[in-house]
Structures are given as C-alpha cells and as structure tokens.
Image 1 (tube, rainbow, N blue to C red):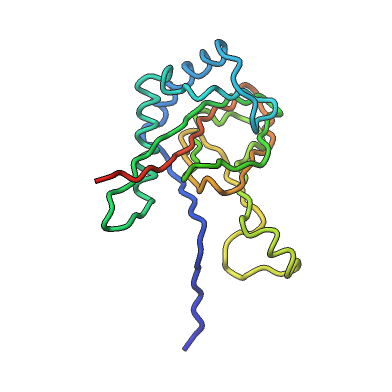
Image 2: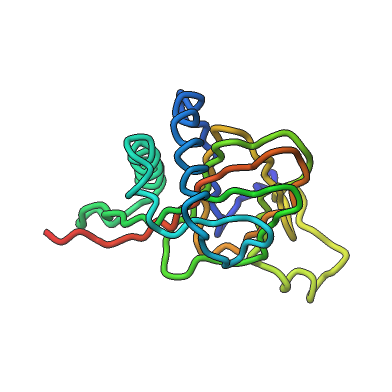
Length: 202
C-alpha cells in the first residue's frame, strides 16, 4: 500500500472573480473618490493611504449593495453549519481604501469576525501592493525545524496574492495579513469587509 498524503486543519482562502466587474467598478470608483474628498477617514493598519469610515452602505448606492450581496453569498457558500440549525445570518462592516504610491498596511487581524474580505475596484499600474497572508502556524515550524518544510503541503511562512481589478478574496478573520507597499501612478482602490456571523434562531 502506497503512502497517502492528507491535508488536515486547512486554512481556507477563497479567490473569486466577480462577474461584470468592469461595470460595477465604473460605478464604485467615482463614489469612493468623492467620499475620499468629503471625509478624512480613519487611520488603523493603513500607512500612507485613506480608509473610509464604516458608513460605506450609506453612500455607495446600488453598486455597494451588489458588492455586499455578492460577498455575503460567497461567504455562505463556503461556510458549513450544523444540520439541525439554520445557516448563519451575516452582519457586514464595510469600508473603502484608496492607496497612493508607497502606501501599505501593517500586519493585523480582524477580531470578532468570521470572514475577512477584500475586493479590488482598481488595481492600477505599478509594482508591489500584494495581499500577504501569514502562516498561522508560525513560529512553531521555525522553532522546531527551521531548515525543513513539509513536502507538497502548500506555502509556509507567508503567501502573496496579486491584486487584480474585479478580484475578491475571502479568508478567516483570525488570519494575520498585511499589504506590501504599492508603487505606481494614480490610485489603488479597494473595498474591505468584516463578515460577522449571528446564528439565526428558529
């Protein structure tokens, strides 16, 4: 009998390309840039960029509603629940980001949420700005065997996702993540979400 490789305790990362994203982004981009002019925003993990307050649904119109509905559907499609209980109902905190050249985000997690999500409205031309997902098993691997890695078990330490206009990424909110500095012309525009679960009562 040959040895069998199994993957236990996985960390799910959902990569989705939103349909008709060009039309969606044409609606979202001017709304986000207009809000950027009106609102000084927040400074949390972002360094050198603008982050809106959590009032995105108030000013993003039908385009924002469509984005929320899509993220909610993707989260539901990739979330299991007990067969004797109804599926979770999602509460979503959502905000916009506008990064200029050199902006980045420090490593952080999103406490109190189930999924984290980012959607790219405009990736822009330039270099860098990758979404970095940090291996949650660290530093255990480095402590016990710093020169070894498991064969055919995917990335360790960190993995990078290249931004693309119309791309949506969901990952567990407890997963440490960051954004590399982006160097380019114009703006890189994204929308981020905390997707929180509340079990519906019968």
